[in-house]
Image (cartoon, rainbow, N blue to C red; front, side, top):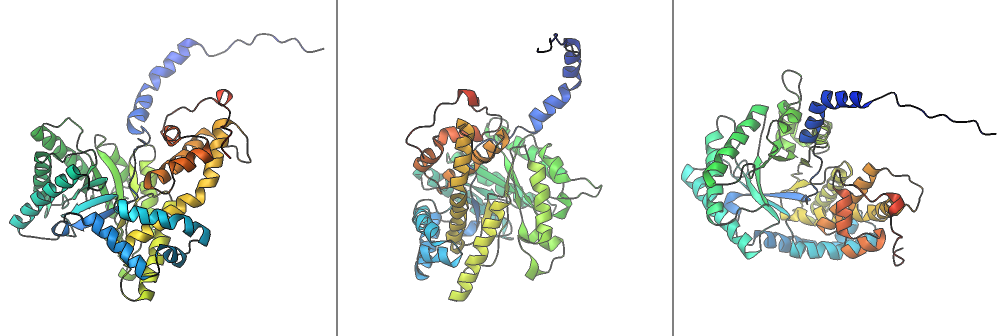
Amino acid sequence: MAAETSPVAPALDDALYGELDSRLAGTDAALTDRYPGEAGDRQPVHTVYVRADRYEEGLAADWGRQALDLAAEHGGLRELCRVVGVEDELAERIAPLVEAKLREEPIEDLRIDFEDGLGAQPDDVEDRLAVESARLLAREIAEGSATPFAGLRFKCLEEDTRRRGLRSLDLFLGALIAAGGLTEGLIITLPKVSTVEQVEAMVAVCERLERAHGLEPGRLRFEVQVETPQLILGAEGTVPVAAMLHRADRRITALHYGTYDYSASLQIAAQYQSMEHPGADFAKSVMQVAVAGTGVTLSDGSTNILPIGSDEDVHAAWRLHARLVGRSLERGYYQGWDLHWAQLPTRYIATYAFYRRGFDAAALRLRNYVYGTGGAILDEPATARALARFIQRGHACGALSAEEITDSCGLDPATVAAIARPHSETRPLGDSPEPPASTS
């Protein structure tokens, strides 16, 4: 005979719940404000830096043509896949995709460089370049030939370059707005940040420029280049890179690791300066923890070993670049820098190989999670979001098509994107529809 059960009275009452709500109100608000989660916007797979005096109309298309020509000289993209270690079956699938990418969108993110790339110029020369490059960018935007993301990097806020850098930013932005070229894709890069105070100063600059041009508050945002050890570990034992994210009025969009300035600051010999040096990995791990949950994205740095010279040198540089791109992706750094058009083929080969190698397993796991169809892995909601973000990133850069996402996941890309967004709620498993019969 089953034992008789008696009602259990809860020990916690509404008065206690109200007390806890009051006690934790500050924590609740801080978590919402400081850690809003990812926005779900497209993140470019790379940033290309071009010195301002070399920025010209049609530059992106020219880089794509030169990249394809170089690949053709070395046996074509399928042969290049083999050179960098992509298996034959996968090479057959991604080579046409990479070719299409290099023809249609060879550069995803272009930065017109007024900093190290341009160097010191007479003031009248840099003034002219700031205005002319902004007008050219606006014209390309109007014609539909601009890269999806574009902007400028100006000289840093250290004393020696502060006025010159801000003047270039001022002139560039004014000319861009006058020409009707201010879009959501505009990116401003603040280099060589060493202190939180420099970031706060940049916020003040943005506020002033917004008022001057009649822009809505918060319209101007910027990315920070992490190029100094002082930003990773402050003099008081603090972590300024984390603090600055929460003292920038939500204006910081990304952190970019600067391979060579940072390495030189650590006194690493030139031949050992690399994205994979232990010193680099430490800094990037700190950056990764600092941005978690904030919605700020990350970019790895670059390699200055270029695919030029003899066949042996070109192949060695391509293998290095492809390996470093893959290494960054595996570590959660989905963006990097490319310094030369000859690096574009391996940027996309390595990136597409990464997403295509992981797609089948990710699609199956996401499908099993959404439809409750079992499987050997019991994924949690956070992992489901990670699976969806992986697929969403692959689709955004061109590695995965909408059709194969739908066929493999039983979900269209828009639904995958909705699952990927932080704080989104997937349909309860008990209410999930039956998987479409046409999917495998």
